[in-house]
Image: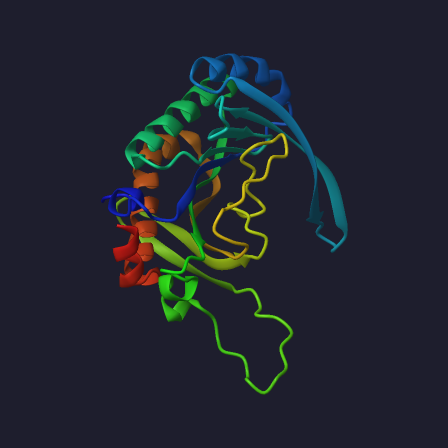
Amino acid sequence: MATIKQELPNGPLSVVLFQMQYAPILEIDKYIPAIQDYCRKVGFPQITKMRGDMLKIGQNGEVEKTIVVQWVFASADYQRTLFIDTEKLTFQVFDLADYSFEDLLATFMQLMNKIDELVDFSLINGLGLRFINTIEEKPELTWQAAIKPEFQGCPFPDDVHWADDGLLTWALQRMVRLPEVKMTSNLLVRIYQNAAGRKYPEDIIRNPRGVIDYVSSGPLVTYADLDHFIVFQNGAKDAIVPKSKEVFIALHTVIENVFFTSLITEEAKQLWS
């Protein structure tokens, strides 16, 4: 199936993420030197160590705060990044002007297989693919004209004195049967906005040095965020990894089908093609 950028060379696709979740590796730090040595040789010479807090709700409702450490390996221009922590591996791609999904998948598979060789993942807990589209406000195409009305939320009453225009947040999650891989997945579609002109959603870090990218068209940005993933209950690596390429292809096919068929308008397709 043709990719969004191949069919829409002027389209809004801004980030593609591949992710694999695995059983916790508490001593991931000891593998970092070997991983870094490999990554720098295959186009990821930059390395950054990030720390952050994560809140978890315990079994009795208590809030637990833990420190999360992530290692970020990046290309020289930070257009491709690889995040590694104790439980997941995430590959982010931003240079999408002339990309091939098959090439991106091949790169992620190469990275995943090599890191598995180095650390030996024991169990696979999840595989995911996420496509984020950044729709800028332009005179020739507003977000209301680009996205079908079904995804624009419900109208508010006119007799209330609203103090602003409001920001849209819309979401729907559905289960999907994937007969080609004999698995069941979850597709989360979200439409949401940012009034500060950020090119990427706030949970996306392109440059770990704190650089934030902004669009040039104006402050209002609308994100069409499609996240398609499979959760495994202690999935055996030997059963999942050999099928992972087929799984990502199946996830990708559904994402593009929803994007082209259900989400964007014919007017948007014409202007972006």
